[in-house]
Length: 364
Image (cartoon, rainbow, N blue to C red; front, top):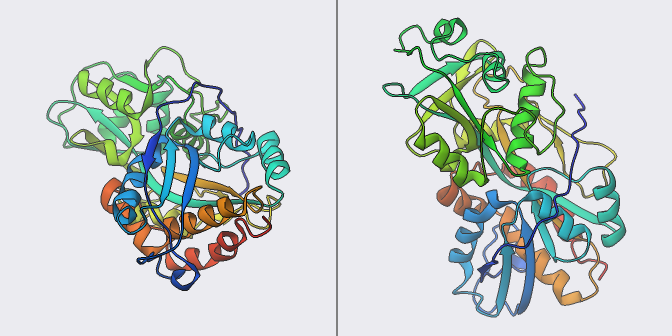
């Protein structure tokens, strides 16, 4: 199924840069991602984008900083919209985005890069989390989730919630939905899920801006988490790695209810199709949000890395290529999983991405 998602670039002031010192593998280590001593790499890269990648960036730094002291990579977690804007405008060497480039942004990136490279580097389940005394987990259908966030189901003891949770002690308490106040790739992925899996209950346009007024709004993942924690009867959506001790929703998929996990999240890419017509080295996916495949968690955030086939400076291209090679390597993906609870991409997908990685900086 092909679905068009509206992408909006967000103009925003630059956040303080997260500086990571890391190295990357040479061609001899492309399959494993091991950098080894004496890589010979040196220089500085500037990247910006999705805040979802921040913990993964820290993990990648920790693994390689001692081995590659002459490479400095600055990554500013300013959000997906800001990351796309900076990359398209040539203000960063690489970028991160939770929503793949489309429309004018896609055209602008191709104009800047010649050959655009866009690959999935970070896959994470998006948790639907709540704060309700005495309740740790709820089973909710896509339609019920959509109606809650559309403010059509407003009490925790509503029939639709009780039907799938007959043993839960559900109070006669108002539901307070919590959403992102800033443009967010997490919002866009969550709204895309609602629109696809429960179209009869959710008719809003898919974008990174939350479309329903009247709930509680908070900035960033940390803001949403704090707002849910601070209330009673609150429910929101956020990167699963940040959900902590909050109550979690097991999502209806076919005839079962699936709790999030890295393994369940990773299965989504296996049952999803790559978008066509985007570019030879653009690996953007139409995620199968409405899958009925057993054991698949459909509310996922797929965060992409953006790079160019051509850079004015050949050394920049070499650094970006080696950096991305490590990021998608088995070692790099496991480091991110350990630090952020993300879902490592499969060996099969890694093999498919290799030509795209090799194209980075190839025409510098």
